[in-house]
Figure 1 (spheres, rainbow, N blue to C red):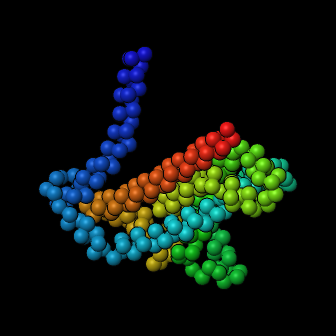
Figure 2: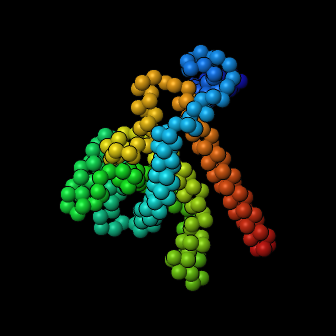
Figure 3: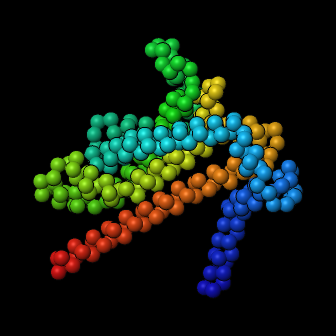
Length: 279
């Protein structure tokens, strides 16, 4: 048993080192004074200053953040409705088709998704005149299309494991379905919604292939700019940019974890008070 525990601990350490070692080295070398990314030339923050003076990167970062926030919010709204429909409405006509359409972006290659959306936007522009060109709107719609599927799966799995007797008890007491959802169901699935929002935001911020198909001149996202820079050789300001992105994502994850922990503690206190009141 002890030998098995040692093996598992060693495997876990190697796994974490494999995952987070490159990230830590990237953060360390973002403070490298040398122009060569693999040669340490002393501690310096010069590349953060160079990054802040790069208007192309800053504009792309702002565009990616705007698209990510809008995409995550819209994906949570639409994905919650899709997950609720699949988890609560049982069998209905067209369920198999609807479920397949929701799940399709999960298994569809990104190249096929990007090409099909590009053809859709071109055809729509020829028929109704919208969208006029490709830019932030088309990228946002494309990102919502595939991010919504991830949120729907998360919400559906959370609703499937939810005890429906709580909702039925509220409706027996006279609450309308909309009020039951807002007062009872929504707070319970809030951690799933937060997780879905963070996942959708990360997927949107990270996407390169689909955005390359549906973007136009003057609407390059951050991954597209980074990819174009890396093709010419990795420069230290890319390390600085990646460090800032890692910091932002880490702060989002910590904030979501704290929020969900507080909600769990609040629900535990409410359950304990209800149990004491019954006694």
